[in-house]
Length: 213
Image 1 (cartoon, rainbow, N blue to C red):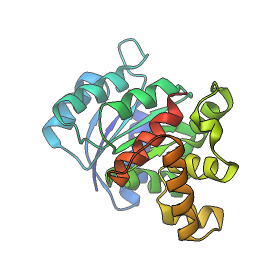
Image 2: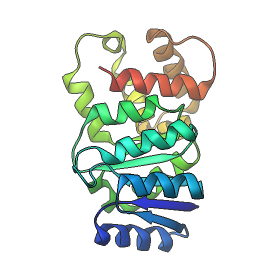
Image 3: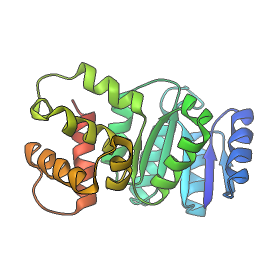
Image 4: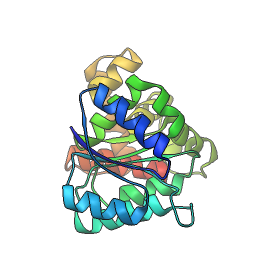
């Protein structure tokens, strides 16, 4: 996999590069600012962009804004954002700029190397990977919504969908059959008012519903 890394910390950039290359990936470009990231990403068109959210000059949301600018020119760009903190609106904003291929992880998640590598591969393949802490915070703080009509098992399935797991991955995590996962998935889609259509599109819309509450 060809990857571009953006972070204003040279130490973190180098650490990520070593981790990714050790896993068999190729870092084809790096950037220290949002402006540099836009140029590198659109010039190289890598298999994945990994970017910090807070970068110079203001150290607020330059990485997110750069990602949105990239998506305006390259809507299908696979982008994974890293953050120190849970800011649900950032994940929602990024997902809304493209159909899928989106990740939002807390930086601490990088230390769980296996999970991190699984997440970047999922995003590069067109999936969605949202940090479990983000999903949990949304669930605990939301107002009354159609999500409240979900059963505990349907809620679990949706949360794992938010982490980017496929039906097979959800089946393995919950120790239930693939058929049971499919039934729960179809029921939660119906409760959220998601009509028949692209399976990927409905999954992304369901995650957006979760993040938007």
